[in-house]
Every structure is written in C-alpha cells, then in structure tokens.
Length: 253
Image (cartoon, rainbow, N blue to C red):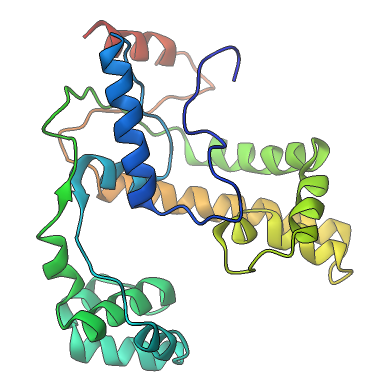
C-alpha cells in the first residue's frame, strides 16, 4: 500500500459473500466520513459493477424464491438460454448464449418476481452520483502490456504466500460456491494441492484466468461508463502521458 491509507481493503472474511449492494453501502459510509473530515476520497479499482452500483444505485429486486433459483440453476445452459429468449427476449438479446451466470440471473428474476430484470433496473435507487462532485478518469493502457503484467502478477502471487493462503482456505472447509473459493488462483492452486494438475499447469491456468478477467474489464469499461468520462491511453514504452501528472490534475479540481 506504500504508506497510503486504504479503506474497505480486506474488510470481509472469506466466509461471508460480499455483494455489490453490501459493498456500496459500506463505501457510501466511508465516503461520507471522509467528507466530514475534509478529506478527499479516491475511488479506484477495476470491478466495474461495484462502482456502477455505488454511483447509480441498485434495483430493489426482492429475494428470489429458493425453489425457482434451484430449478433455474439446474437447467442445461442451452435450455436456459432458449427459455430466457421466450420469457425476456430483450435481456436475452443483450447476453452471450454462453454467459450462463447472467442468463440464469435474468431467468430467475423473471420467474420469481414476474418482472423482467430490465424493468427492475429502471427503478434503481441509492446511488450517490448526484450527491457528490465526481472527477472520473478511465485509464486504458496497452492491452499486451496488461497481459504481460497479468502473467508476472500470478507468478508473484505464488512466490509470496498464495499457496499457503489457499491451504488455509481449504482447511476451513468453506462452501465451494463462495466468491473467495472461486477467486482467481484459488481453484487452480486447490487442484494442484489435490494432485489433480501439475505445477506448470497451475502457473499457466492461473495466468490465463487473470488475463481473461482483464479482458472482461477492458470490455466493461469500453461499454458501460458514461461517454463523457475522460480516458487516457498511456504507453509505458514512451513518455507521451504522465499518469502521476494526470491524476494530480484531477485532485487540483
């Protein structure tokens, strides 16, 4: 952290699933506290959905009927896609047929509430975008540079305690469906510890999972933020953009 105060970093135990709504509620409180002490909170990260929920709010979707959820989640991927195309064609047209998680979510919302996910999202509430002065900046570095960093990052994780961390998680016998058990590196290292894959495969699959996530981030930040948000495209092979100067200009605002 290089001596810089961080908040909501490592704030949840792995046994508790943290939703975007829960995180946004805590983030709103932290931001308010910063403002009360005349501090400037800097919202940073790559998890776009969480940022979106904080700024725009979230749809007040009721709890999904457990029976409906179990039925939908047990469906064949292709069948779920076909049913969604019949029951919520607008949402189906927005999703890739292989995006099983979002397809299941849209289908269970429609079946449990009788209202489409899109209609629920029109009733979003709780966002802070209209309550704060926001100075956004989207940093879009060269993709290959990011992918190279992804490979180095996973190797560094292995060298700096990731294996012991996964061993500790496995010893707790947590629900395998918890987000922490599906985090990048955990399934790969767990498979190696169980003797299911070789050490070389851990590095290769973990690095690939990291790159896949980075690719999804590129896609999200290309499509989702407001078009007026400024973007910079730094190149670390040249000095045409100075990121420190760019961020300093935001703080001066």
